[in-house]
Amino acid sequence: MQTMIQKITLFLAFVLLRSHVVFASDPDPVLDYCVAIKEYATSNPSCKNSSAVTVEDFIFSGIKTPGNYRQTGFSSVAVNSNVFPGLNTLGMSFVRADFDVDGINVPHFHPRATETAFVLEGRIYSGFIDTSNRIFAKVIEKGEVMVFPRGVVHFQMNVGDKPATILGSFDSQNPGLQRLPTAIFGSGIKEELLEKVFGLSSKDIAKLRKRFAPH
Image (cartoon, rainbow, N blue to C red; front, side, top):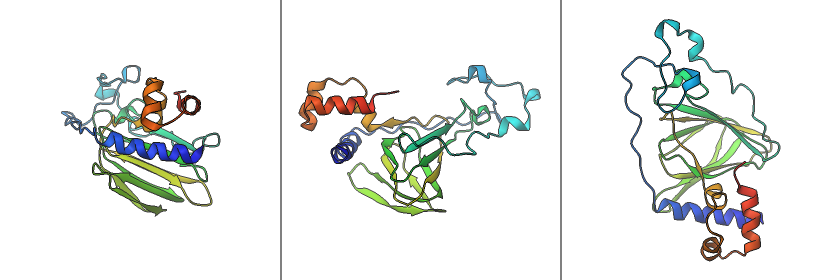
């Protein structure tokens, strides 16, 4: 079952890259900063009165410890203006990703941002696939950085013998995230289509839908 899923996700990467679209980047800010009011931290939030802004608005402490990856082998905590209002209008965000041994960050892409991934701990098999279906992948280790161009499918897997951690940075405050297995098997696409595209039985599809359905 695991081998079948890996083959399917790689195939999905090739298929979706053919319809790759590049979106516009974040607009330039017109103020030094615009700390979002937490109650309204949406796509167009109001700014906190500058006289009420303090240094605490520019500090975030929510990723000091690893996430809970024990159940699935992988955990990620996104840090954007919704949880860190000081990032609002600054055109950036980031993520902490923690991997158990053999943990996987499934093939996915960010439609609105380039990502740089810094290995804080461990050894990660990391790579991306460009629009000509060429793969760029290798094992990166503690202290190394890999860049994933905007909109391309990329993936990561812990190949070390202990848990690993990556810190990812994006050049957008809202990079977007599309995980390929969830997009295909967790979105309600008609079963007949999936059977014809992937040559799977209805039983196989039911298993994949159960596994990748949004929680």
